[in-house]
Length: 99
Image (tube, rainbow, N blue to C red):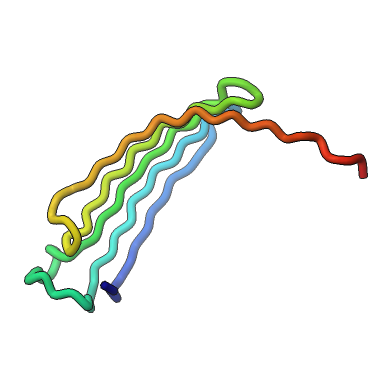
């Protein structure tokens, strides 16, 4: 299905210390047209997504991330969907040929 409407996104990101990054945001979409009826009107159609991230740099090559994501898309599911994640990432760059 498709929707056309008015959207608003607000995002806050920062890095208060060299080993900490954070982010949080909210996205709203108020449809004025939807290809799918569903019997909803007005603010009952409002799509909402809220998310937050905390990243800790544990070591030069190792990060730990905590995320939470809550969304409500009333034409798909009439309840809030919430997901939380913990991610441990290892990153190493192989040095390339000298330039």
